[in-house]
Image: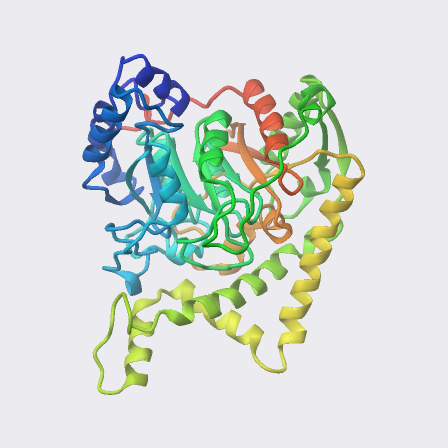
Length: 487
């Protein structure tokens, strides 16, 4: 493998700055690796044909003395984030051939920071899944074991970074879709505070839950990406620019971390995950942080509340895909038949399931029974976190996933088992607060294990402090491509 494959963005920027490397060389190397490897991974659904042209433009900017935060760095973009002139299909047949006329705000900000858009990554259809198996493009496989899932729904982004194809990727996180695949693939994944990153140009799934996040091999790279893509955007009325965290709160020796100990005893959690999270707690304590057990009494209602709220919003958001204005259209003699045929052929099984669940929850006579109760449960989950943070805790430490990566096909026929993959991640989405998944070792099969840190609203800087402590305690996992993954 190339010596560029597993370098962090910070390391690559240093080499670019000293003239040891050009962006064109970097993109050429990434393209060569992708052509060699991705046929057996399925991380990308398409590459940007103008990537080398963008890289050459970046090299000219650097030669002229202009350097920007991501100058010349190739970045992968999840295929539910709009890219002007480059198809955005959301992993769905109904949007096959849809080419946006403008970039999403986050893509615009990447370009303005000098990044090279390398390609679009695979995902569960419309972001609805936990394994990247529901994509019309086929599944994404885990770089650590090609018979296992890469997680979802941002599985393509996670696999691309873990396999050394790109150093950085964007994903979206509605109920864990950045953190869960990051955990399965042994990299870092951040879900920012809701509203701190613009959703303009992100194809909507659950509008009150969706947020664009970042995947990378280091905490420093995650922080750099968020600095670039974050902040208020007039095109997204829910967006804002977060206030800076007070410097004195960023002292690791004053960090107070609450371990969600009761989460380590829930049904279905693997012993290896519980052991790894407790090891993470010890590592934080050994680094000078104060660690103690905390409880989140209403977290047990998170999964049912999430799957009512998210599917209800999906039912509304996906009503626009009718075959009239964009995407695929079935040919029929009358309008209603065309609608039925287009949506019947265009949507996959899981998307149809969630549309029906959401539509049912919003039906007259059922809104109070389901949707309104789910909103009350969300308020209680949010209040649990607010109570903890108001009482002096800075962060919550918890598992990211109940298990390491499961096998392809293992949960496809059991929707409830698949939904329970998100049991530890949906809480942060319901509360609208930031969370980061950090690798903390491997299980007996050599698969990555992870813990997540959850912070208060706009507490990303605190997350970085805790995540860096874990990063020092748990060195980067051996890249799977070296010696164990043969294309």
